[in-house]
Image (cartoon, rainbow, N blue to C red; front, top):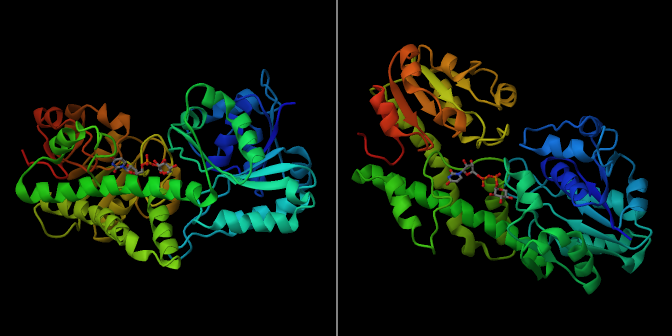
Amino acid sequence: MALKITVIGTGYLGATHAAAMAELGFEVLALDVVREKIEMLERGETPMYEPGLEELLRRHVAGFEGSSGRLRFTQDWAEVGAFGDVHFVCVNTPQKHGEYACDMSYVESALASLAPHLARPALVVGKSTVPVGSADRLARMIAELAPAGEDAELAWNPEFLREGFAVQDTLHPDRIVVGVRSERAEALLRQVYETPVGEGTPFVVTDFPTAELVKTSANSFLATKISFINAMAEVCEAADGDVAKLAEAIGYDDRIGKKFLRAGIGFGGGCLPKDIRAFMARAGELGADQALTFLREIDSINMRQRGRMVELARQALGGGSFLGRRIAVLGATFKPDSDDVRDSPALNVAGQIHLQGGQVTVYDPKGMENARRLFPTLGYAPSALEAVRGADAVLHLTEWREFRELDPAALGEVATTRLILDGRNALDPELWRKAGWTYRGMGRPTA
Ligand code: UDX
């Protein structure tokens, strides 16, 4: 008989996972403690912008004409416990306020609510990013609370999806990693992921700590690549070299690879910054803090890029104060194809310039509402053209395709000064220079 799946937590990860499981043919019941989230999803809407996700939801949420009806929602833990053979825990693990460590309270409370309803054989599968050692502790919690006893088990199956590619990454992942303690758990997960594995996705079976560590070490490696290239950008600037050429040239070496070597204002979002900090905190608890001291440097190189962008703008404007200068900011989200502004380098730079007296006007294709909520004192414009109107400098801070397709000549007509600072090294310098703009990238020669 086909497995029945539940998904606990319908944020970014959970909503995508639930829809993807329905797409793979399973009956899915998803739970969230926030009623409004459930109501939105039942209407086929998502609380965040993610390409393709609403379409996928509407294909499966019960109640839509032509939908498979395989995806339903609830707030009833007893219903979840009775329904599922496999329960995916997809709640978030944010950074603790004022600390590096990760806040496990959502995961713990989800398991405390679910476990007493596990009265029949079931596999609980953690997908959230957690400090190593958590799965072991959570397994003991299930053993204590589940009426099914040993028939209720835990497995750990980290998720590697990227915002903007969540649907694709979930349906066609690079790899599936499972930490298991029994053959039964492995067999159940092989059944869940039969389709992607059948299409050639590697299926890596390991223990709990390794599965937990795969996620945090993968994110640490990605963060390291970005900060490495940003460090090279600083050296290039000092030596009048070109970091974009340097990245291209080192990237031809397969061992290094081309991806994640775009210098600029650095990484942000809800994952990389908090994951490397939580990893350092956990290593400290384990007595292995020396092994990860380099991550402190990765973090500080990353944060430094934001300040360097502000300085680049100040210097390009002739030095001195931003007071009375009009600055157009293109981009507010932490990356393109997302409306997520959590720890956004773009908004951080915009905020710093605003605090230093600059008159900042922001435009972003999808992140305006979230940006306004977080930074209500910044100025906002309904289009790139309107943001640039009257500007003394234009800062390109999130590399949306829309910005690459802008017509520099048309923008030049409305800007006060044709000065473009590319904080993502994603625009074509020649194109802008031909239209009479002074173009400055990060770690790139001035002309
Ligand atoms: C990341 C991981 O990629 C993903 O596997 C994990 O599951 C969650 O964390 P995400 O947060 O969606 O995904 O963003 P990602 O695409 O990794 O980009 C992170 C940040 O790095 C963005 O702010 C992006 O602009 C920046 N970045 C990325 C660079 O500055 N340079 C690059 O070359 C690549």
